[in-house]
Amino acid sequence: MTIQWFPGHMTRARRQIQDKLKLIDLAIELLDARIPLSSRNPMIDEILQSKPRLVLLNKSDLADPEATRRWVEFFADQGLPALPIDAVGGNPSREILLRSKQLLSAKIEAQIRKGMNPRAIRALIVGIPNVGKSTLINKMAGRKVAATGDKPGVTKGQQWIKVGTEMELLDTPGILWPKFEDQTVGFRLAATGAIKEEILQPEEIALFAMRYLVARYPAAVGERFGVNEVPADPSDTDAVVALMEAIGRKRGALVSGGRVDLEKASLAILRELRAGKLGRITLEMPDEVQA
Ligand code: GDP
Image (cartoon, rainbow, N blue to C red; front, side, top):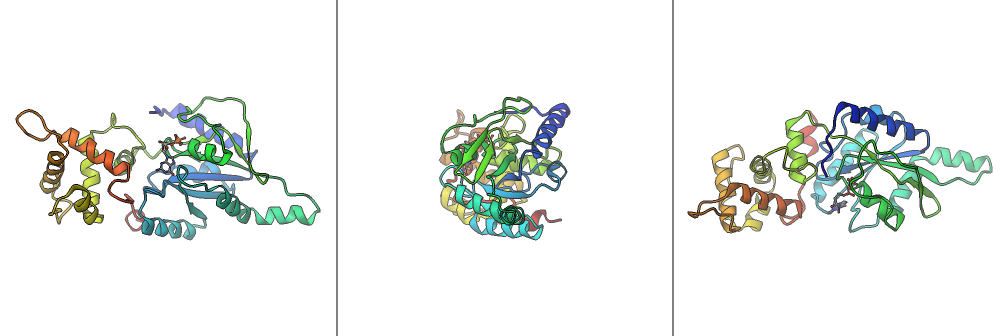
């Protein structure tokens, strides 16, 4: 699914989320654990205002565990509790409920003091396209309630989805736009598959990813692609392209005459990266983006 984001769509998406803030106790901000900041909406603080917020680092099954640990610390330093999850292979409902209760403990305790039965925590999941919102809603609901590929700006009746007895989710997630303006962010989004290739050339995306892999995960590159020599300098474009060609040759990505089809080679590299075939890889670290 590709959403064409125009300023009007952004305004509408923002307003739709802000209208729902009145209904909820808690916003659940879903990020991609492999690119936590690049998968973040640039206006998220303004949009969610002072609403209590839980950050979820989804697709953590694909991310480097040590990097994820550092990202959790990064968010904690900003006063945001963050929880790594795997919406496909795991069932994070209990942990999400637990963290949500901790976040809202003052409110819940006040209700108990007044002799009230604390009502179910009401939450809204927000995030950019393809971050896993629908997958998570369906997992928490225990059935298929959210259609993947929901379009921004399409309103339908709101439904509360029960997650056990102590939590309720809005069935339609808040769809946010990513930070398009920054080219590096665009490459990271493309490398993880959050945005489709039509916007950027596969060769460019794969070159970007390969530079990063060579710098941060040389052993994984050597192992996965059976190459003995990984370039020592990721900024050496010729050497990195030569590596991509060597991989293409191994993958049979050839044109007539036996030359390597670099586009096909790039698509193969990206497919394997996104599928986790190189192991658990994170494509941005807190120390790189802190500036
Ligand atoms: P949405 O656009 O935010 O609703 O995203 P979807 O729920 O449609 O998910 C986009 C893609 O990411 C789908 O192919 C999901 O199977 C996949 N996905 C979602 N969560 C996870 C996860 O935790 N791990 C992995 N490996 N894939 C996930």
